[in-house]
Length: 545
Image (tube, rainbow, N blue to C red; front, top):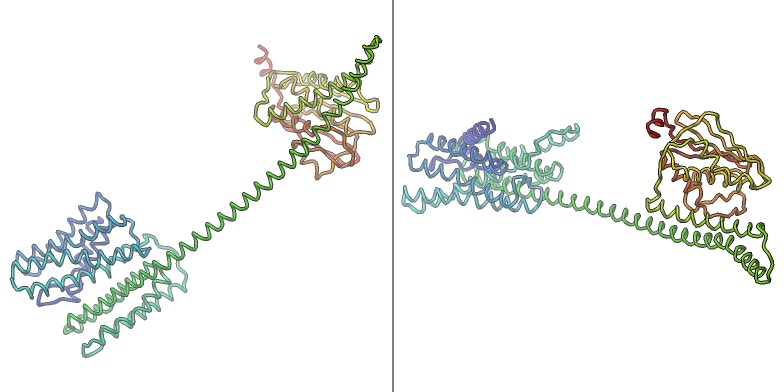
């Protein structure tokens, strides 16, 4: 269907060319529109369809030339010229720009001008010149015939090929104002064409009036892009020849060639300006994109710099806190051990109670070191769990037991149901969670009070809560409680520690596929909630057996 449609269009343009610019002396057209059509279609044709389109040119060109009754030999060399001309041009353009040639850059426009305005027409003109010399040895006659062919091929290629090469292949909604502008543009071009062809008698003024078409062509290029410039040139060319050529059969060939040549020059100028405009727009968009990218890069660098500063500050704060917290149990431990060493040197006996304080300091030191080790494992993704079905109430008792003989100011209450609430957990790690939450509750309840550990079923599984009656936590600090090294500072008093307990607790709960959050009111205490998935009886039985 495409090849057939192309063949019909080629034939109709040939008839239009003969009807509008027929030269009886040589039985040829001084304005050969089919050459532009064939050039553009062969540039765009896919590789598998290329031979079919080329064959269509051969068949239709042969039929058109044979219809002119010019003898068998002229029919052959004219047909050969009609085929070789677009073949040479399309081959060169495909080699230079590929089949996606859009005339959107100055390089493409210049390449098209050289190929369509020189190379292809020169090949066709060369063939018919040699053929004419073979039939009629008159060099002057052959030269004039070849020159006329050369000019007609240039006009057809330059004026008609850009319409197809710049075709976008889709229609987009256009505002009414654009339609009005396009209408005014068409009227101005039509007025120039009519004026150029109706000046009588034919004089050099008539074709030179074609230069008046340059401003509208430039207007169309700048406002409507390459496709607008190409369509405007075709409209001007057609309007200046048809139907006025039929009304003025005495119109000399030189006037057609000169006026159409001016329009061809105009379309090349308009296409160049359009390409320059589009390239400038592309460069502007590229510059804007590079500017945005640079700004984003600078923002990233600034953010990275800020994060690095925060990390360095965090490191310095951590080293300061860590050194202080490690010295806190280490200093009395060293002093107490030194005292006990002197007593042993003096031969004194030591009571079991005398090593309670050193052991307490040692336990505190061990906890700090364990927190640091756990944090390192979390940061490197190496905090491994040994998950097994466990009754959570037993884990709660295991985590609470070390605090039963703790501060005399606090009353520890453990509230668990009679039924066993089973979860898949690492026994030691979940006991660490309970211990961290209880220790946190006692630490931030300096005035004493009740610390309640409660275990209950929950719609999402099992819920563990640890509540205190301490100083509470302001709302703006609650979202940061589970960050590394963060310690609430609402009371103005430091309660010690590295700020790692809740960070480790959060990660352990997360690895158990649970969630943890806090509810607190300053001055009224805090409640930490931990929800874990509960095992069904069938899952417990399967895991245990």
